[in-house]
Amino acid sequence: MKTSFSVLAIIFIFLCNTLPVMGWSLPPSIDVTEIKFRYGSGSPAIPIKKNNGITLITNPEWQYNPTTDQLIKNDRFAYIKGESPAIIANFYADQYDTPELTIQAYPVMGALNWSLSGAVDFSSNYSGDHFFYTESGRSVPSGIGSQWVVFSWRITAIGGEPLLPTCHLANTSHYFYTVFASPTSFYDGEYGKPWTEMLDRACVWAANQSTEAACLSSLTSSLHSFPSSKMYYDDGRHFSTGAEVDLQALLVSLSANDTTKADCQDYSNFLCLLAYSIGLSYFSSTNKVEYATIGSDFQTNTLFPAGHSSPSSPFWGIHQVVHFQGDMIADASAKVYNGGWILARGDISWTSYKPLLTADSGVSIISTGLSYAKTP
Image 1 (spheres, rainbow, N blue to C red):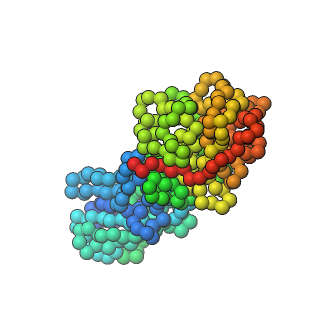
Image 2 (image 1 turned 120 degrees about the horizontal axis):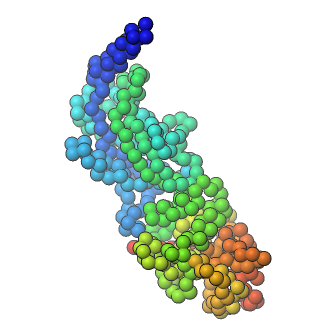
C-alpha cells in the first residue's frame, strides 16, 4: 500500500511539472530580470547615495541578464521601518504563453515578514514592468536596522487558479536599510538623500530603537566608543568649519588604516548627520536635533576625551555639541565627571551639563543650527 501511494505521488508531481497548464508548460523557464524599489514619486523608498555621496542610486536597483547569466546590479535601498511598500519587477520567459501568472516574492532568509505578490502577463519574451504589492499583514522590518532578505520567486496561480505545489523560478538577494523616519534634514547640497556609508553605521548603532531620544543616545554612545585605533579626539582643526563638515574626507579617513583625529566640531557634526541619516530632524518642533556652539574662551573641568587613555583639563575657545529637544545636550567627544564618568547622550539638560563642563560663569550656548555635509 505504501509503495502504491508513493508511485501515485511521483506520477502526480511529474504531471504537475511537465504537462501544459492552461497554456503554460511547467516548469517554465522564467527569470527575474529587473527589480525597482524606488520607482518614482509614488514609491515609499528613500533616495540614497553611494560612493561617499557622489552617486545617486537609481532604479532598477537589481538587474540580471538571463542571456549571459550575469548579475549586473545589486544596489541597496531604504524604507521607513514598518512600511508595506510596492515594488516593480520585470521577467524574461524563454517561451512565453498565456494566461496571466500570479507570482509571489516569498522571503526564505533574512526579513521573513516581508512577502509580495503580483500579476504578470507576457506579450513577448520580456514581460515589462509589473507591480508587486506587500501582502496583507506583512511589512519590511519594524525596527531600525541594516537588513537582508532572500526572495524565492514562485508561481502561485495561473489564470487565477491556484497552483499546488507552487513553481519556483529564482532566488534574489538584497541588502537594504530601515530608518526611523524620512531623512529630510540630511543636507549635502540637497536635502533628504543620505549616504550608504552613513546608513551602514547609523542603522547598526541605532538598531531597533523606537524613539528619537533612544536613537540619539545609542548613536552618541557608539560614536564616543569608536575604537581609538580608528578615531579619537584631537583639538586641532580637521574636517569641520563651524556647521559644515567635509564628510567625504572624514569617511575616507575612517575607512583607511590610519587613525582619524577629530575635534569637537567633527564629533558634533558627524553625530548630527548620523541622526539625520535615519530620520531624526532639525525641523522637528519637539525633538529637534542641531549643533550647539558653547563659548567662549573657558577652562574646562577634568574631562575624558574620546579615544584617550587618561583625563585632561583643556582650555577651549569654543566647544561644539549636539542640542536636542531645545535644552538637552549630547556630546560624543568627551565624558564629564559627576561622581563617575558620564557621557551626555541627549539625556542631560544644559543647566545640569554646564557646571560639569566648566566652572567659568560666563559660558553659554552662543549659536545653534543645522549641521551639513560639504557637497562632494
